[in-house]
Amino acid sequence: MAWIRSVMDLTNYRLDLIEHRKGINMSYNFILDRIGVDISRIQEAKDELTFPVRLKTYIEVMTLHELGHAADREALLESMPWTIKVHELKKAAPEDSHYRDPGILKIILDEQLMNIEFEKTAWKNAESLNRLHQIADEAVFGLIREHSLASYKMPYQQNLRLYDRLLTEANDMIA
Image 1 (cartoon, rainbow, N blue to C red):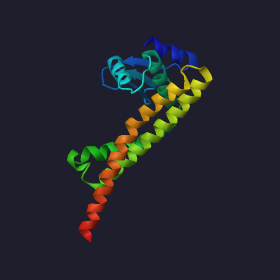
Image 2 (image 1 turned 90 degrees about the vertical axis):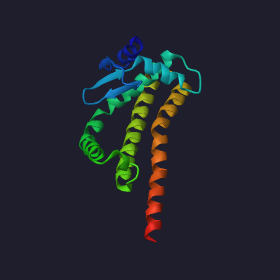
Image 3 (image 1 turned 180 degrees about the horizontal axis):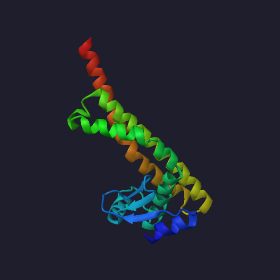
Image 4 (image 1 turned 120 degrees about the vertical axis):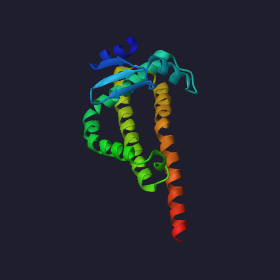
């Protein structure tokens, strides 16, 4: 937690920091304007990298990323009405239909795409903070960024392939 606080101090971001055990290494709660961290998960996430990096560096880069979300808080707040609508739609539909109904899957894809854009923006903001404060080596920063973005892009690509297949099957049935 000290490494996280030191990055927040250096960058002049004064956010609440809470420890949790939700299985998410670090997250920014834009409603409450705070960062949550799961210390055991952050170690596991660092160990999942395919390249060597010190735990301190990983935590510092991920902190910059979460601060990048904080810098984009207004846009995140503006997305709330649509996000709530999507959540309610997914909750109302049987879970097994989420990946069988092209209409629901399209909404899930739109949500994933929006999340990817928020992630890219947070990483751009983090990169600016890193350049300004020289916290992490740019190459290591880039590797961690790409690894993190892949965790959003890969599920999106999988769902997009499924969506395309569902549309093809529906068109084949019509033809």
